[in-house]
Image 1 (cartoon, rainbow, N blue to C red):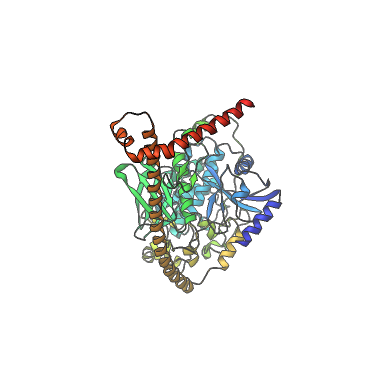
Image 2: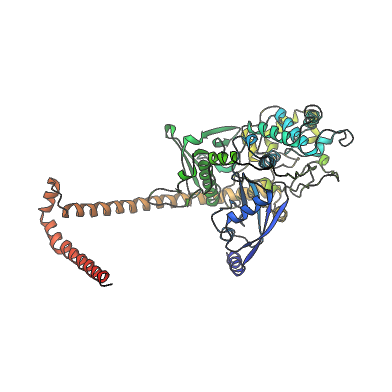
Length: 565
């Protein structure tokens, strides 16, 4: 608390702040912003730097000191939104996935969406069968290194690149075969367009999972896609509601509610923390407005609670999908030049184990991939001080299959399978260690997405051992159980208090309405009976008439002052 107070005081003394935004190709854009600059100013600077006109699909994401992710609100001051000390570090990401990414008007927009989906594929958020995975990876190879050249691409060249959290040698050979034989002659633009068309048909396209628990305490992952609201649980997609079926999104504390119009369905889930639940709610409100509404003038301010206790209020401030597509159709300019970043082989990051075959780095590649385990968990949030939400790791989900595959025995696990991925596997959007099926403690406890390598190193330094992580998890579960009982009692008392206040308010309104009706000239039998009672006559002569004369006197006095002026 003291550090935040001090940091706020320091910011108030500064007139300019340094700001670094990590772009989708992992390059960085650094600028200086004024103290009162709003998010729109920074967003416009980045779009101008990228020569991007179809910018409504994108947003700026940052992580606060509590490892909670946020989207930068464009209508608010940047300094008031950031809780950390300057210089500020943020990320440019796709905020609203296009329903048909291959149909985007400009190539620069398609390229940036291509980079985002490639990132989703790498982190495991976009899942597919082996055949689809091989084709997607081959498209990436063709788009970023060009046609196969025996002189430049020796045997096993596809194994130098990391397209997925884990993959087998069989898959690598299949990727190379497709790249050598089926994609010869495709330009980068054509390969990227084909990649987008393929990715858009996958069930988990556009999924950015939020960890929650259902009413039974089972882990679940909620996501908002271009087509509706999705709940992933266990090994299947348990709920899918189209946007026109979702009528209301509401949250209270850590509880998130989804209301559907058919059969009055109400889905209830519990987020790790109130901050995570509010972030989930705001993401849902924005996605619903963007994909569901016909025009931005239909956007209304949304309250998180009921009429009498409004809670948090939020309003989506951008254009909706239909308006964005109509505006894109009017773009008439020469296509801007695209500086594509070359594909680079994977290098071992401090928090990621890529395996011994993926450590060599050719010198001919331009861009170094430093993908932290924290950035990989962009979809999740730190739950170290709340009920732990345990992810289903790729190693756990496929460990039985990998043991049965002799060709992948040396790998330990086989993540790309001939069977369709279960949607629940997308909840672990980062590679896992090859030894052991239990996910590292950092993956169970860390759900944030820092935008810097330094934060990744700090998180790694604080990662407990596996045994200590289990003990810590048990202690957390005990504390969480005690806290949950207290929270339930507090919630009950709060509900009773609200009911009491609402009842008193309604009685007061009814009393005032009754007095107005009885003192009016309305001739109704019910009101005539009330006027004839001794109690009403006493109230009329002793209270109402003096009060009316006092108000009339004050009004005449105010009227006289106005006339004299």
